[in-house]
Length: 113
Image (cartoon, rainbow, N blue to C red):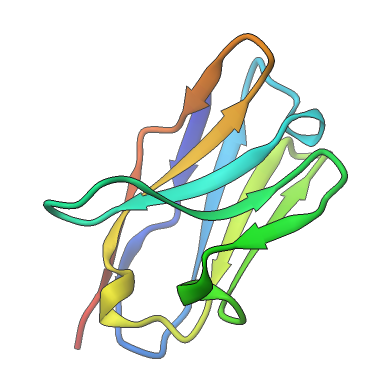
């Protein structure tokens, strides 16, 4: 199970940190990702961290977002800076085991002045 939190309303240029707490899954041994879904659009991959802690980002967030994991807390994070209105979406955390794909419940991020 994944529990996402940390979303909210922020002005353009602001920052937020999303958290994804896992239970029943050990995040450090599975690929973990953040996706987002804007109204009327498909759910898209934002950032991924693999089992060797290599990271990958969609082009639009490179240099602004950072994905990380804390093994002790069994939590994944998405640090978002220099936020833009086009970053507005519901953000979902994701973990992929060999048997199952896990999704968090989503947390709303709204970037607006």
